[in-house]
Amino acid sequence: MDIGILRRDGRTDPFFDGTASGRLMIRRCASCGHWSAPDQGTCAECGEEGLDWAEARGDATLVSWTVVHGRPAEDGTVPPPAILALVELAEGPWLHTRLDGVAPGELREDLPLRAHYEHRGEGETALLFRP
Amino acid sequence: MGEGTGAAIVGLGMTELGKVYGRSPRSFAAEAVRLAVADAGLTLGDLDGLLVSHGLGGSPGIELAATLGLRDLRLLSLVNSFGATAGAMVSYAAMSILSGAASTVACVFADAPLKPKQSAGSAYDRGPEAAPGQAQWYGYGGMTAALGFRSVNTFYALAAQRHMARYGTTTEQLGAVAVSTRAWASRNPRAQMRKPITLDDHRSSRWVAEPLRLLDCCLVSNGAIAVVLTGSDRARDLARPPVHVWGWGQGHPGHRRERGSGFGLTTGAATSGPIAMKMAGVTVDDISQAQLYDCYTYTVVVTLEDYGFCAKGEGGAFAASGALGPGGALPTNTGGGQLSAYYMWGMTPLSEAVIQGRGDGGERQADRNDVILVSGNGGILDHHSTLILSPHPKEV
Image 1 (cartoon, rainbow over the protein chains, first blue to last red):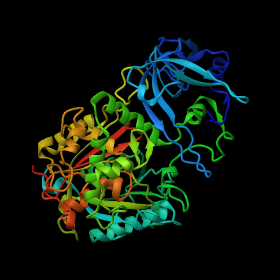
Image 2 (cartoon, rainbow over the protein chains, first blue to last red; image 1 turned 90 degrees about the horizontal axis):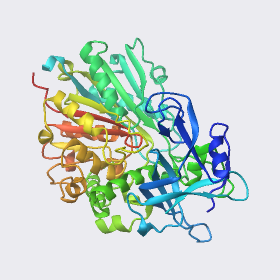
Image 3 (tube, rainbow over the protein chains, first blue to last red; image 1 turned 120 degrees about the vertical axis):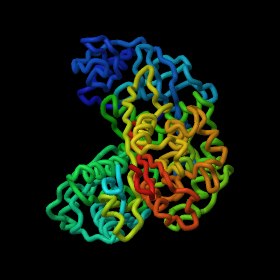
Image 4 (cartoon, chains in turn blue, cyan; image 1 turned 60 degrees about the horizontal axis):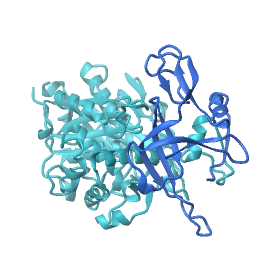
């Protein structure tokens, strides 16, 4: 998987602290306990702006997916297709992610998935999901 | 609402559309407004209102008023509901006219995302231009882009796939929308893509992002379109047949990205449509033709359902029945839409509605034009607008 180099941005660093140690860190409202995606700044449930970072279980189900085919390179080689997905964490939030270790023919609504962490030589560790 | 108290579209201006390079959105917009005013038999000095749409390739901005030399305006604003903006602008213009805040208002959209030697598909993409593997991405959002979410196509693909998985919508049904829309485009001299296509052509077109193939996706165009509105009483005496505004509505569902979301399954049309139709005093059975925002074939399918032209989940079967094409029960996107004619956001369906409402459709004029529904759709199905238009003044 050649996706480039992931860097921190100062706003979502705890997420990458999590992926580095195999944990899925997302946001949780200090006021009402509602869970949100890592890039949420405000609680959609109660409007609270102080969202804590909290560890999610790492369990998810498949909401939808798309198989993306890369354009052939100049030498004619075709990059392998990528399965991009919308997954629903057990805690409720939806994440846009990529699936690994599954064939397009196996995809269906509600397919159970687990968080999977992939680290390349340089930069931060990426979060993907696998069956 | 009597004839003296309604609002009507009296002018339509369209620049050259498509691969037209070397001009700014403001230049295109100024030309479209001039064309629309002249079309109405008016002069720029007759305008006392100007509404300018947001655009991703750079909006003309409200500075357009100065470019056109407009003076003593009583209404001037930049409007942004993304793809729902055209319908929103027409409704704000109509409200301004009905309230007396302004009398004659131009609404314009312009965009110039296409550059020479650049693929249409990449015109709206985000992300670094560096070679794969070399690009650097920042933060959680950067990771999402790095994993492959760099084009609006991928988000619409997720929406379409969810609809297909939930309701059994098929590739062939999406293809039926592409085929019927192209059949209309083949009769429109302004359409960018006029060569008729078959379901086989659709099935053999390359994947953009499964389940969307190339022929499921709209074009990208440079250019501008403007309309001019004024009161229905004044409209009668102008150069072209007025197209009266009977009703309008908006719907912004605010689907959250979390459990229970209707993303991909329902759109703001379910809210917007009933509001507009009630205001117009019509039901879905009264609609003669539909001019729908067709950024993707799937968008047409889900929009038809949400307006109630068919039951939820049956939009694909409705399209495959032949209802949308020439001779069908619900002529839809009779100019070739965004899929085959030109992509001017919500001005694509609106401009065709004006052409049809005037009876100017030529080879593609639909049999009936008494009640025309126009939709706009923005974001990833986040924003929706509806207009109900008619060549007839609205009865009191």
